[in-house]
Length: 128
Image 1: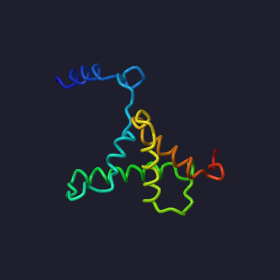
Image 2: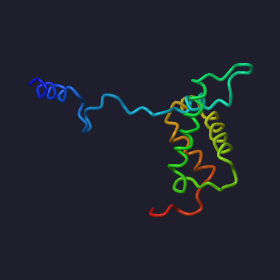
Image 3: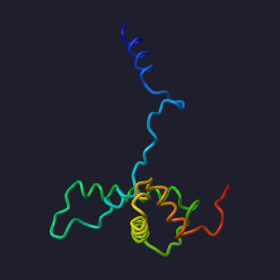
Image 4: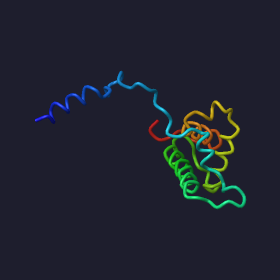
């Protein structure tokens, strides 16, 4: 008997899905600073890689792959001359060159900009 009442109360308390309900600006899934930190090539000399380090590193590599794959052929074009690990290393090196404030931004947008600048498509993408 109380379930419909509870549902109504909860519905009124939740923010509206249409525009005005969001109290916070959307945060990036991953900042460039976090990506750089996660992408480390290895643990400190003499230290063992722990599970958190390994998960962070795999997360960074998966994130790079996902962003690159989503934009490949539309916003950047792979030339086939570099290995994936070389492209990833280039991206991370370019991210490190950015000012600290820029690295706080959305890593995906920065990654795509780096890829588009380094590997532009010679023909426009199909359909626009």
